Amino acid sequence: MSDVFEDVLFEGDALKVTLRVDADGQASVLLESEPGGPDLSVEDEVIVVGNGQGCPLEVESPQRAVAKLGSEDQLATGTYALMVRVHEFFEGWEFGEG
Image (tube, rainbow, N blue to C red; front, side, top):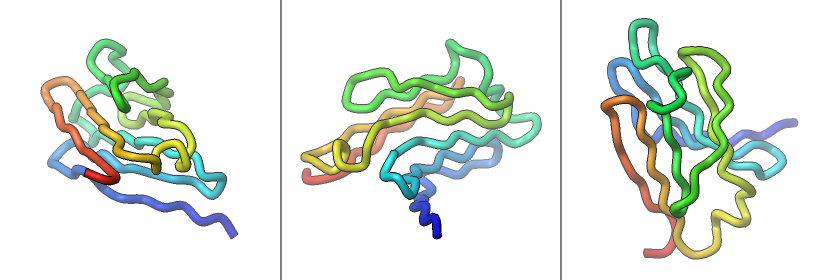
């Protein structure tokens, strides 16, 4: 049985941002773009930052990319700030104790 936790952080007309934790406890951000939406393969236009550090981005297609955040245990200690920029879209979230 593989349990995956998912929490949709943002869902707009053309872009969806989902926080995921896989069965192995690895956290990531899934970026999905609708056809005609932002091109996720444009390197300088898709940026994910966790606690002030750039996160590695794996582009699967112009409509799908995944940013690896690290282990869930590392993210669960204290607060964790996440920022996502995709072309004109920019949003930030803070998790944990505040």
